[in-house]
Length: 126
Image 1 (tube, rainbow, N blue to C red):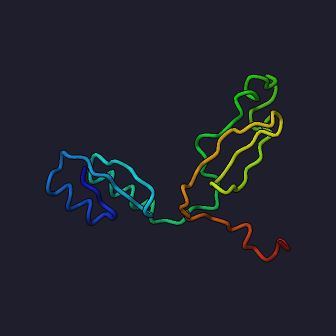
Image 2: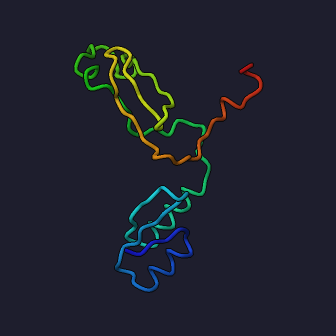
């Protein structure tokens, strides 16, 4: 499969063969198979921007045991008892209620861009 690391390379790939997909690679580790030039352009445009400091979550993590035990009158957000933190491998989500792993993302030794805006503010006294 052909590979592109920027929009210009993707344009060349799709110009040579518009029907063949292209593996687009951004920031050395983020990969997406694009079926069209428009999809590749949107991918590289999105990946060129810094991570926003706003809530961009579209799918949440929850402990499966907590979901089964959640009282009907509470939302999953109100019921959640999660801790999130760095590990030697990457990032882990831990359920405090059940003392179990919810998700452990292994970065495989790679560093990724992150928005740590709140940690860099001087007015918080951190």
